[in-house]
Length: 127
Ligand SMILES: [Zn+2]
Image (cartoon, rainbow, N blue to C red; front, side):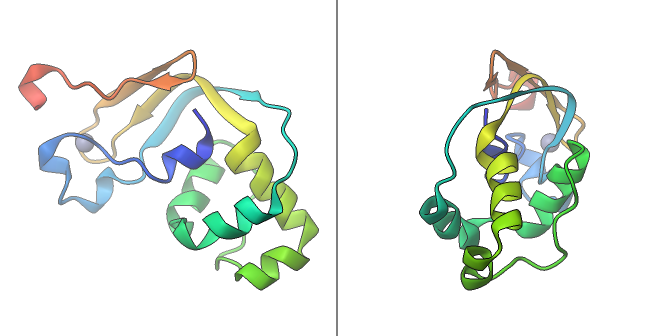
């Protein structure tokens, strides 16, 4: 799964919906692989306003990526900042989590990732 996806996922446990600790999910024992894809500037510029920047910064540092600016760039700033464009492309689109877990900061549930696919099915006592 792409790191971008993590920015749109929250814990599926009902009791976690109202908790701010259930987002973002925290990668654990993550094995990363890189896809060889070209930078798509339009895609990055368009996805930028939809990102939760605070959550992305957290995910980025948890995965060991260089730290992102504190404030999200504007679309104009991103277009003129080649390095930031490359960094975001690398983090959001090139990098895949192939194996590992996503951990909820509220309930501690661990969602397993296998062959790049996160399993969001909950055991019956949590549904
Ligand atoms: Zn949870």
